[in-house]
Amino acid sequence: MSKWMGLFLAVLLAGCASVEKVDSGARAVGARLIFELDGAWNQVNLPGDGTAKVWTMEGLPIDRLLVYSGVKDGDEIAANPPGGNAGPARKSLRFRKGMQSDELVSLFETMLTRDGSIFKLERLAPSSFGGSRGFRFEYSLIRKSDSARLSGLGYGTVDRGELFAMLYVAPRLTFFPRHRQRVERMASSARLKAG
Amino acid sequence: MDRRTFLRYGCSCGLGLACAGTGFAATTTESGWQVPGRFTRPEISSDEGGLWALMDRQEKRMRRSPFAIRDAALREYVQGIACRLAGEHCPDIRVYLVHTAMFNASMAPNGMMEVWSGLLLRVENEAQLAAVLGHEIGHYLERHSLERLRDVKSRSAVAQVLGLFGGVGAVGQLALLAGMVGYSRDQERAADAIGSQLMSNAGYDAREAAKIWSNLLLELKARPEDDPAKSSPLFAGHPAPEERMETLARLGALAPGGSVGEQALREHVRPYRLEWLIDDVKRAQYEESLALFGRMLAHDARQADVLFARGEARRLRAKDEDLDAAIADYTLAAGIGGEPPETHRGLGMILRNRKMWTEARASFRRYLEVAPRAPDAEMVKSYIEEMGT
Image (cartoon, rainbow over all chains, first blue to last red; front, side, top):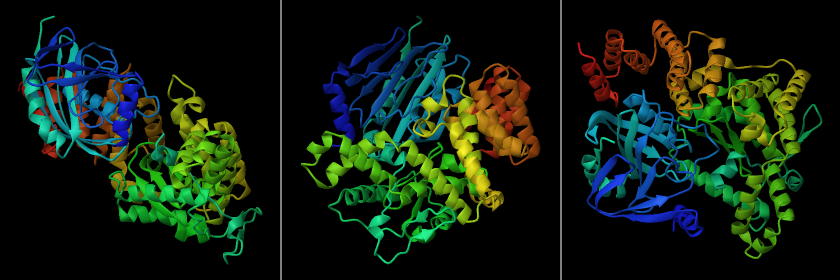
């Protein structure tokens, strides 16, 4: 058993985290973002995850989906980077409604590398998300804690001054290729309610 | 805390007394402090042997690590400095350069030394780098990590239980505990004194040592919200920064003169400097980065890469007059020449936000001209299209 699986289980058993199943079908995240899921996910509620909903298929040490819904101007983007070691206390990372796509990706990059992991942007292009004009990005990550090589995929948009985004990351070999299409379908299914 | 964090707080071993009779003579320095003779590998069944075995495993991981910087010329350069400082211990020291944006170096009792890229970015010359390496070698020569391990063991009731299991496993647990405790302040003071002595012996100007800490303190004090002495691991376990600077300045004054080596350091880190500047901006500790970049520019105002980095930090922080200042930095960098392509992207982003379409398009087009295969090229093209012709 990897040390991260052990840690994950320990946190769970200690009652510091809870897990809920997210079934297939139409699922709302927050007041305005809805996905049409073609398979179940597990939502993990961890202390310190703050703004993002954290979902996983294989377990957090392996894969992780962060979903941001209705993040307002000045709100903190606060999720632990993959592997769970956020390192020493860091300055808050906050969304500002005037941020452009490059700057939003840079914000996510900073969040993902707070533990010393290395991020490389592979591609950033315009894309629709939630029916709104947004962006799609692909990245690679070398996780500091165990030097694991991960691949990542993200979508985002700012609609009516609020940020909506999803970021998925999993080991480059096996797990990311296995789940990539499902994540892409989930992103395509996203729609935003008028609110 | 994992093994990597343990190393981060430094780890050293000395075996001075146990080397008596091995045939390696101790060296007496001018101050009377004796450099111990070379260490021999301890018995695996001993606590020290267990510690070395733990560090040997860590070193195997480091050799394969994607975070290791594998530039042979740069590594040999830093190894050369460590060797000059360590004297006859040189064959026992192996330097690994690590791609990590923070200021740190550490040394394990088995002779493995880690030097982080954040440190290489921050030191102004070879003498300052030698000061940090000399400090870590001081911990190694005095076996401070073994002292710490034994201190934790003697105080810890847990040790009695772990002792039942024996060997490397128990030592590993204690090593982790010891890592959490950190070196004592007396050990840190001793390492500073030894480091200063080693610098002088190797021909470096020991007065440079105090400057490292004053520079670091300026960076950390730039953060408005907290006291670096309380929040930074660099200072939290060490003597108070002011005491440290005064002591190092006094030690340096005892043996003034010696080489500084600014040009040599600059030449060796040049291929990596832009990457490390960008790493620092990405930490999003903008006040610290701005203090660092300001210091670098005070030394030489015509560094296009540093101006670009300062522009990026200001643009991303976006407080008060930051955006105007960022525009000035980007413009100056472009005027000097040799600026990174992202200079034009950064400028374009600010101008786009200000709805200065003509100027923004020009900047984005320049970015795409010099970096047509940039990963965000499609995104930047879409910005241009949105702004019309």
